[in-house]
Image: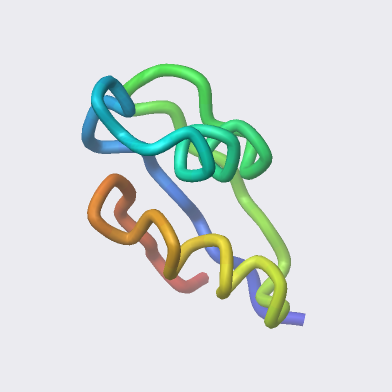
Length: 59
């Protein structure tokens, strides 16, 4: 299964509560933190919700 590397590049300060919760659910804590996830529709949906805060690379 394909992997996605997700990196938090902008602060969540000032974001909506549901967007902050999505970033935390992805496992991102601080700016420049990175996590790897399997490429599933659920993860893609979470990324799409906070696409303005994260950077995504396919592996």
